[in-house]
Length: 81
Image (cartoon, rainbow, N blue to C red):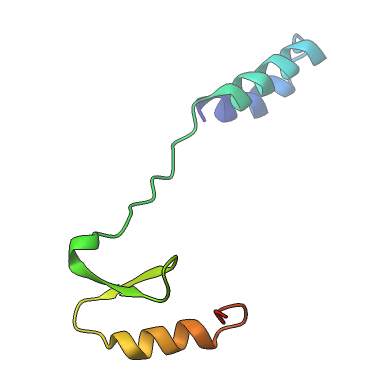
């Protein structure tokens, strides 16, 4: 990001060549980007609902498991035969 502040002032300079601009762009592209860390839900705060022998879903504790099961099975592609 620090290179972005240098680019506009440097481009107007007669000493800047296409190679210099290319190198600045390469430096910007190769900078370490912050990782977007996705946090997994805490399964200790959730209850498991078994849909069938292969499928389990997790819902908040205290929620109705039968309603969650019926919502899961009512969605397109959710039917288990």
